[in-house]
Length: 110
Length: 114
Image (cartoon, rainbow over all chains, first blue to last red; front, side):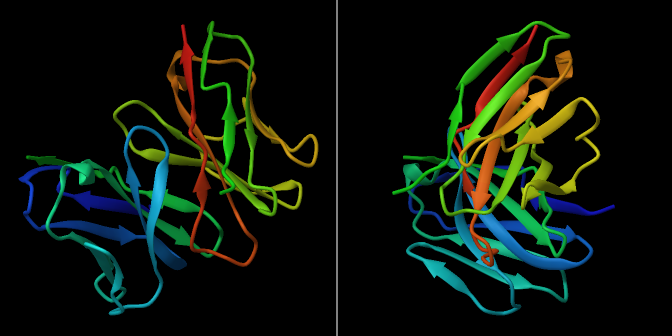
């Protein structure tokens, strides 16, 4: 059965901390892995990763994929209260189907 | 900036009734998706649609569900005979052809079945 597992399920940190969110997957015919941020409603796209070992970076967020070990991490440095959200990992297969993890709920307290 | 829109934002219905959830994808996008998210649970893929037909569907997408693109702009999800467990947030998404990097999600429709 195809699945995407995220850890931890929830995380509470103080502003300024660095966090690492994990996503492991078992999906046949893997095409790419995507990270989304979900605040109140719809998920918004953060990164897409297709190749191993190439870090994607956007401001304080970065992500990397390991296709051999079947996982990805999302790092957030110098966290701010605005980073509080659910972070979703999704895997797209070659059949155009997305599999989402349960998400990691991040709370950043001042 | 173009965006996916969904209507209504909240739909309340009685069990057994039919509902139609509407989505207007971004105009030059060719792939369309429906997802649902039951409160407190993960986002679940329902169906993908391309070239006026379903390209993939999950086991959740059974005979009570159907999708349609009735005109050049709308993409609808119909639930024929709603059940209590259909209560969820339903998200529509779309993406361009040839690009697997970004789906644009709509704001969602919250469906409450009483």
